[in-house]
Amino acid sequence: MKRLTTYYFLLLACSNFYFARVLSKATTFFDVFVRERFLEGQALPMLTEWVILYSWWPWIGFAVCVIGAVLSLLGIPKDNILKNLLIIVLIVEFWIMFFFVVAFILPWVKQ
Image (tube, rainbow, N blue to C red; front, side):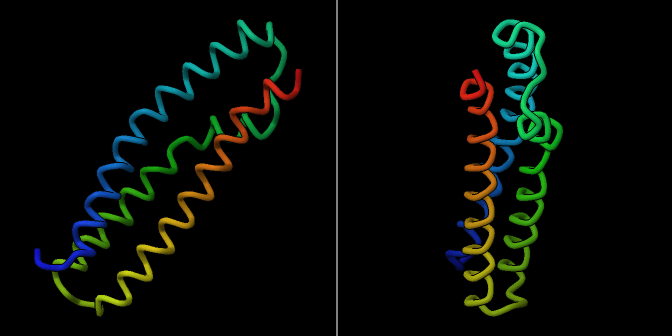
């Protein structure tokens, strides 16, 4: 494991694994807490409902990062290609995380 991109992919895979575990529990708690106690039975905003429904997306990031780490270990593509893939994965994940934060804040803005 001499390539630095292997470590980056493994670090990102571990963070995605942890985030997927936490996000599934957090969305369940958020759905119950906000719907029953904060909104008093009113419906959540549509974007928030959609985010709660698709809280499994970090597992896709985990799979992509594991595949990237394996490819880096095998040395099949050049290192520049893997670095570009890593940058694309990071940009997409940061955008999705921002989208999730905005969706989780919407019930408070709606009030």
